Amino acid sequence: MSSTRPLIRRTLGAFALVTATTLTACSGGSAGGTEADAAAFPEAGSTLEWVVPSAAGGGNDILARIVAPALAEELGVTVQVVNREGGNQVIGLTELANADPDGTTFGYTNLPSILGRYLDPSQQASFDRESFTPFGSFASNDIVIAVPADSPVQTMEDFVEAAQDDPGAITAGTDSRAGDDHVNLSVLEQELDMDLNVVHYDSGSDKVAALVSGEVDMALGGVSSFFGPYQSGDIRLLAVVADEPNPFVEDVPTLTDAGFPGIDQMTSRFTLSVPAGTPEGIVTTLEAALEVATTDPEVMSALEDAATRPDFLDAQEAADLWAERETAVEPIIADLLVGQ
Image (cartoon, rainbow, N blue to C red; front, side):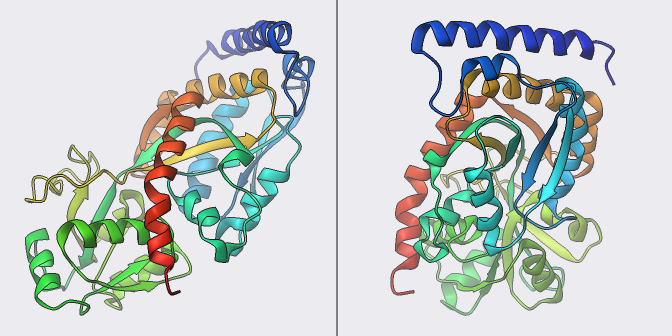
């Protein structure tokens, strides 16, 4: 790792102290803790918990274990990845929202997947966007549209034509009801005048397995989820829902290049948050450490090996994106849940 890290850690600590002093003078501190706490963060020898609201070995878990060691080195503490699976991620997200707002617990609040966890009333979530404070996003994952390898559908044009010719005949897999897959499929249906037969699975891995086996006719999701089956020839990728070709599947056309321009990007972002009320100085310290960890050459290489693009957003950018995505997705989810 870089020999500059001890200097970076000292700089982060000094910056947090200056930020904390300034904020205290201006506003008297934050509701969830004192800025004196922020100045002392992180305490030497302490352990921070990174809550992953899904099972060990999944995509979120793999990326957390790539980034956590570099983040720990920048902060000079231990960062422990803790899996809290269950309830369609609601269990882990609830634990994160209810944790002490002292910076010692943070976790995934990935966009846009978290939106379906609290905008769907059936999930009975006790949290919403205001329950968290994001401190950054370290990677992004473009969405791809896929079919089984033996599908007669060879191109995006073939797929759209088949779906329009026989409404409801094509089965489409998602990783959950009202989740990001479901929302993205709904957008495609509306924009491309299609009617798909949507089948919900319990997880992304179940969805991919159903696609590989031919149990469903198509599915969409992050490049990283489909990369292995794509490399092995078990599935065919029809298009990337992005403005530019994806570097991990450069031979796959964008939707625009495939002849279907004007559809909003669906890129997913691996976003980290602390509980609401965490002092701003702590948020700033975590944000700065995450940026340095994200740009570490070893971390970048490992993320790319997992077919995930290193792509840092700061705390404000992540918060703005969250609000923007929520505004766009909320009415779509409401429509999806009508009559269900």
